Image 1: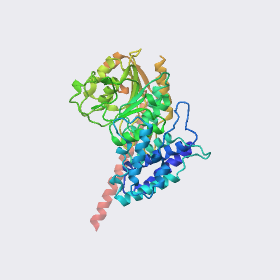
Image 2: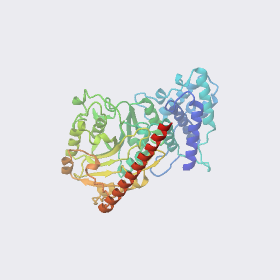
Image 3: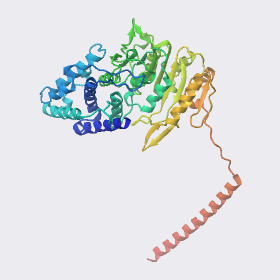
Image 4: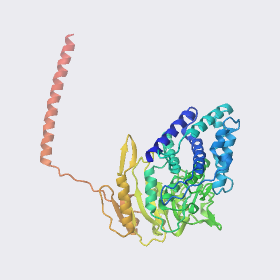
Length: 494
C-alpha cells in the first residue's frame, strides 16, 4: 500500500508539472492540484461503500458530497465556459457541508480557479480541462481495489512539492522525521485531551500529532495567518477525518481567535513550529489584554519567543507544549531575561538540539523545546542530537537511531531514571542552579560533556620524524638551487 501511494503521489506531481509548470512555479500551482485532489478523493470516498480507517486511532472518513461538489458533475461540465466558477462552487459546498465554517473564510477564497494566475480565459480553461481529465482517469485504489489513505497521500504530495520548490522553512515543509519526533514526544492520549497549533501552516503537524495521540477532530484547534496555508489545512484536516475541528484564519499574535470568555482558550497540548524568520509588532505587548508576556517582551526582530509566550499562555494548568525553534532562541542575549523567567517559573522540561541543515534550502540550526506546567521536578533534560544525522547528496535527515535514543532518554527522564552519556546521544539532567550558573543559556554544550578521545603522542619518535623531514627539505632546496644556476648559465650562452 505504501509503495502504491508513493507511485501515485509522484505521478500526480509529474503530471501537474507537465500541465502547469510551463508558466507557473511549484508554489503557485500546488494549491490548485491539491484542491482538485481534495474534490476527487471526497467523491471517491462518498461513492465507496466503506469509509477509510487506517488504524484504531484514526476517525472514520466520510465526507458529505453534494451534486455540485461531485467530481463526476464537474467532469460532465468540462465544456462549460464557467468551469473555474463551477470548481469554486464545488469547493465552497464541500467545505460548508463537512467542516465548521467560521467567519466565512472559505477555501475557494484562498484557491480561486477563476484567477488570472492560470492565464487568460482560453488558456485557463485549457489547463483546467486537462487537469480534470487527468484526475477523472486517476485511480485512488491499490491492487486489491481498496481505497488508499488519501490523507497520507495529500501530506506526501506536500513534501514532494516542497522538495521541488527547494524550500522547507515552515510547518508544512518541516521534515517528516522532526514532525514524527514531536508527535512521539507528546506520547499517548490517555485522557480526552485537546490539541492546538496556533501557527498551523498547512496542518501537517496537527494531523500527525492528532493521529499519533488519538485525539478526535472536535478536540483539535488551530489558526493560520496565510490564506493559502489556511485553505491547505482545512482540506488536510477533512481528508484525515478531522472535519469537525475548529480552525481560524488570522494572526495568532495580533488577533488571536481561539478565545474563551474574553481570554485565551486553554489546551492540554500545544504542538507548533512557528515561522523561523518572522518579525512582530511589539507596540501593544506591554498592555496585552491576554497577559501573554508576563515573562518579558521579545525584541521586534525575533518573533519566536512571542509565539512561545502565546503558547504558554494557551496551556491549561497541567498542559504541555512541544515547540520547534531556531537555535538562537537558546542563547541570544536579547531574550535572556525571558529564559530567566521561564526557568524560575519551572516551565522548561527538555531541550533537544537538532542537526544543522535538516530544513532543506536553509542551513539553520534548530532545537525542540518541551514545556510543561505543574511540573513535579525542577530539573531540565538537555539532549544533544547534533551529530545524529545521515546525509545523502547534501540532504540531511535525522537518523532513526537518534530518534529512538532521544525518545528512550526522554521517557527515562520522565520516569525518574538516570540519564547516561552516550556517544551518539549525549544527555544531561541539569538543576535550576546549574542553569543559573550558565546565565540561563540553554545550549546543550553548556551541560552535555563531549568525550574527546585523547591519543597518546610519542614525543621522541615525533622529533625524529621532524628531523628527517628537515634534512629532506634541505636536500630538495639544494637541488632546486643547482637547477636554477644551470638554467641561468644556459640562458646567458644564448
